[in-house]
Length: 88
Image 1 (cartoon, rainbow, N blue to C red):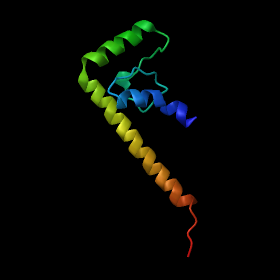
Image 2: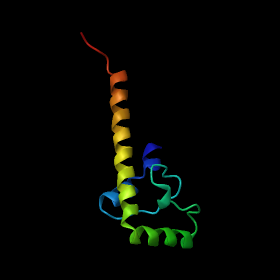
Image 3: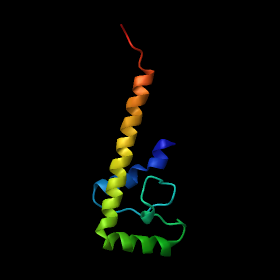
Image 4: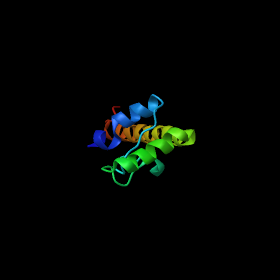
């Protein structure tokens, strides 16, 4: 579903100022925030340490969220234009 691939938990984390480690399933996030194997605690730890130490990585996540939200709003607006009947 859209909600599952968007991942509200990740978005909330970013809004609250906490970087997130994700799998490739959250495709709107920067690849530098992703682990290849979400079942690997060591890989997750490595990415988490890098995100905590590098504030530029958090800025990339925040920018990715803003970009995704902008695209989503534009898509919703287009869908409403198409589905809303024009009345004389």
